[in-house]
Amino acid sequence: RHTNAPDRAAFFLSVRSGFDAVLQALGLPEGSQVLVHAMTNPDMLEILKAHHLVAVPVDVDPLTLCPDLDSLEKGFGKDTVGILVTHLFGGRVAMDTIVLFAKKRGLLVFEDSAQGYWGDDFTGHPESAVCMFSFGPSKHNTALGGALFFVRDPELLRQVNQVQYSQPAQSRWQFFKRLIKYCIIAFLNRPGPYTILCAGCRLLCKSHDAFLYWATRGFPGPGLLGKIRKQPSYPLL
Image 1: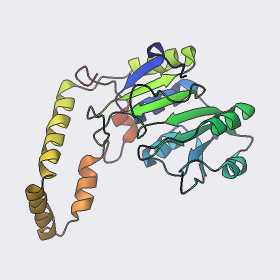
Image 2 (image 1 turned 60 degrees about the vertical axis):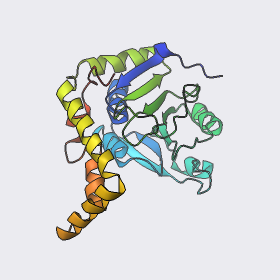
Image 3 (image 1 turned 135 degrees about the horizontal axis):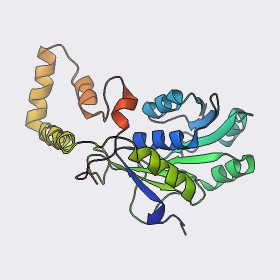
């Protein structure tokens, strides 16, 4: 039975925004190492780097996509402070062994469930320090943005919320533009419009895959921290 409760939840503009706020609240020493699931969002690595933390990649089992225990052992060192585990492609990593590994060594467990939301019955492992859920455009249960975090330590939750409340809010206009953008993308996803899009990209000697990757990225271009350090707008909430 999971012990996370709504009073331990925090809402963010994105998983990236929440993870950044958590790291700000924790204030981990520079040079601290975080064991990172080898398959993860590159923006999460950029956020770790921005906080002067070192990401140490951990191999995963190709069949289960679970972190390899031997690789965790090899990656662990005197400067290791946490583990970032990523649930991928709608699956769930078996967390009990990882949580036990972390508990024996006094490590924080960050559980990235951006792709692992199946319904309200699952709020992450009860012993994880932070469990992160995304409702971005590519998710099955989408709000075209936004993230929900469960934070086990009430004091850390208070500090995380304090960090977020000091940030400006996303404007309603920004969220409205996002709605319009994804309405257009949904229209282009139909066979006829998609064919025309591909033909137009070929005429311009552009890759339609590259165009769609750019168009669907949550925070394209440089200056990631400036884009994610915002509170979600009220319509998004």
